[in-house]
Image (tube, rainbow, N blue to C red):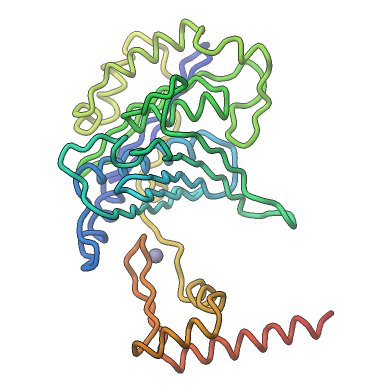
Length: 329
Ligand SMILES: [Zn+2]
């Protein structure tokens, strides 16, 4: 079963979290593999998607925010998009769009940053918005400060946290066909709350970046963890091996009912709205070529079908809604 554990280093300005996605990650892969149009992900794409899924769960666990965290990689290589969305209750979904061939062993930069145009975006979409409120979004390129392409998702996200949040962050990420896992270590800012959504970061905090000896020691230990160990060892063993000399305090883990799990937020109503937004002409033009409008969800694989009668009904309802709305003004 999937699980997420958070912990603190007593008396030190450092916190951490470990996530292991098992059943939830296998469900994402199973649904993709059973999609007759796309088929299973190539191993390299599977690693990328698993790593961002684990990372997004870790980030969601580390912020005080009631809304969805969406982590997206907009690629300029064969991987056009890799996206994962984690809700505040840790239901999550992920998908990737691959166009063209991913050669075995293809490095990350060639998959998503072939011409240095790739981007990583993190969006926080609040559950309840005041009128006109836009979701918060931060974007970073997929190269480092010297312009060199980053070859690990962990480096991209560490770079993101430093650039957008001024937070020293260490990530170890790994994924295979059974497990997507991650370890996060973060230095707590001296003042204010380390928070993706516009933290109060003091001048002293900026000056302390990279300089806290406790954080640096704990980070180096984290980096000594190998991908195979992260994938294979249970959480207790990982923490004991890395931090047996450190004062670790653990919080109640998310297990069982509260564990991260796969769930899709798509619905027939949402797809219907999308078709209405396409417009009646577009819908009719699709229906002139085929017997129904078919929209598949990229995340869960559910196919929504609207035959000509359904489609006509959508537009009739939409017109009535508009007239109803107009009548109230
Ligand atoms: Zn869906």
